[in-house]
Image (cartoon, rainbow, N blue to C red; front, top):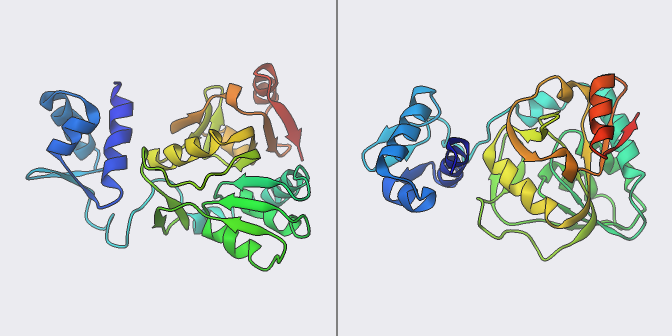
Length: 257
């Protein structure tokens, strides 16, 4: 198991309570005590954890109000590139067929789909409380939620990897966002979010990525999926010709609004 994968599993174990024991990590990581110590030392030196007797915990403040995600908060992100996000959301909603079931992952761009879904009679599985609030006034829209913990800074519901939290639901389309996208694929800042999105991808026939063009300029994070797993990317006119070609070469349908 690579170091990046071990780190992802360490954070997944930490998120629910803010603490994980050495004994649990030995079972979870299937690694030697020396390897686990090196991983924890590296994470502690970068300020991401604190080592304590018997295990490790999140830094003070990280677990004070419940589990937290790495990356930009929803409130900070909602106002960035809002015009482009609104156009992207409208174009994505136009792909929905009346009466079908869809999955909409939480995000400030996917949220912009909601005003355009009224009257379609959709069944929507979403992990976002923001999206739930936007859809509640639509009498004909049925809403499904997974189980898990509420991550307040994104207002989404997530469960650790390996925990079955989704209803028995399969959909023709998944609409999701990303913190970044590049030739490697779509990326997110937090491993817990990656695990949740993988569960959604496994339940979808078609993956539709909604990203404004700024997401092509920052190519860092944990990879959610490769370009070969993405069917459609909807973005704005700021996308570079080089990235547009990379998407098309990978067989991704590109929609520019």
